[in-house]
Image (cartoon, rainbow, N blue to C red):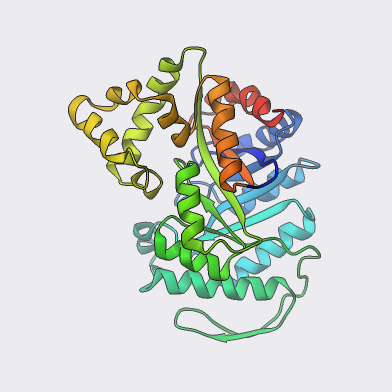
Length: 318
């Protein structure tokens, strides 16, 4: 079990980039501890969004989930990370992942071995961030006597944004922690840590949905279509649940609305869904499973994020 987890909010990929200054300030003013930006192709860029958030706040921790390993040369990735860390020491956390392979293909950078690329990228980025000179000749990454002129004064943990078993095993070997996408509940967190080998220390970040209402069924009804989508794509966060087949059967018989009648314990595995007490129970269960940072994913409408802001602040004050 971890100590008290930090609570944050995500900046959805669909939000207008110009909203970032106000968003960052309002998140910090609410007492929320973290803000995570999403870099998905071809929306908004993580590094520039993170730099903006750090520049307009004083204490807010900012993370990127995630930088695709092949979208930038690892030396450039290390430069970007080091620069952000030196702008705001101790306030920036980088995440690196495979990236969506179809998007990587659109850019002409798809790796023949995403696992190898992620392994080599995280390994050399971490070495560069410590200030060492790196010469590396791997299957996917090549560097020749590269050294950062301004390595970070405080080296951040480099996290791996991964979901599947083999990628989690890799993360346990080379990364300082993991970022787990929406749907990650306590059962999946424990499963992920088991496959990562439970290294210590190892920083665990989760993204989670929030749907709070005085009437549980209304909160469930709002969240049900999103959960149905996770089930349809067979997201690992839900396939490891002991009631996955039951959820799939409910949808087959009655569509997403059939999920509304699931027991509260099921929903606590899926997100901060139900009453405020249910949302707090989700947070407590994630903490008990070993999560250090829990970040609310607000969806793709900025107005929804403003509504959720005080609810997230209440979770922070628990």
